[in-house]
Image (cartoon, rainbow over all chains, first blue to last red; front, side, top):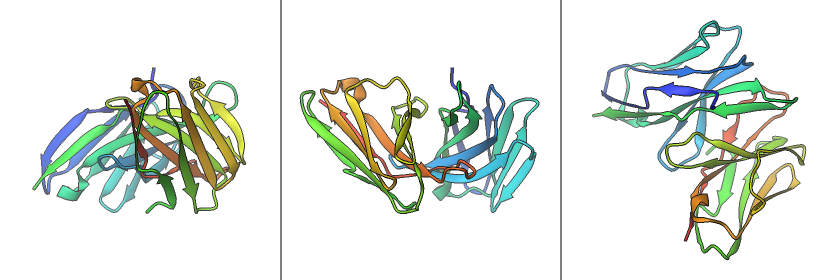
Length: 114
Length: 113
C-alpha cells in the first residue's frame, strides 16, 4: 500500500479563501515534502519539513508535521486562481534494504474559483 | 523551468514500435529517476540511477529499458509496449546527499495505440 495518502482528493474554494490539504503516512520518515503539479506538467517542489520539525512557513504556505500521528497538512492562505493545481505529499524514507526513496501520494486536486 | 528537460513532450506509438525518451538535467545533480504517472494513481518509481549506476528497478517490465550514459543524461528505451503503458513519464534529478528534494522535468505524454 502507498506511503502517503492525501485528503481530500479534490477541493474547490473561492479566491481569497484558505485551502488545507492533509497527508497521512505509515512508516518513519526522514522528511516530508509537498509538491505541486499543473495539469500535464512536471512536479515542482514547494516545501520540505524535517522529521524533527513541527511547523514551517514559506510565503503563503504553512506546513505542519505530527510524527506521532504520522500526518502532515499544507495550508495555502489567501488562495489565488493561479494556485489551481494538484498537490502531492512525498515521504522521504528508507525502503526495504538500504535504499532511500521518495514515495508520493495520489494528490489533492485544488480548484480556486475566481 | 526547473533545469530538467525532457523530449519529446508527446509521443504516440504503436505496440510494435521502438522509441526512446530523453531526459537532460543542467543542475549538476548526480542522481536521476524515471517515474510513471497514470490517471488517478500515485507516481510510480520505475528506475533510479546514482552516479550513473542503476540502484533501483521497481519490478518494471523488460519492455522498458533505461540507460544513463553520464550523470546529466537519462534515456528510457521503449519496445513492444502495451496500451496500459500509456501515461505521463516524468524524469527527476537530485543531488545525492542533500535533502532528497527532487527536480522534475515537464514529462513525456505517451500514448500507445
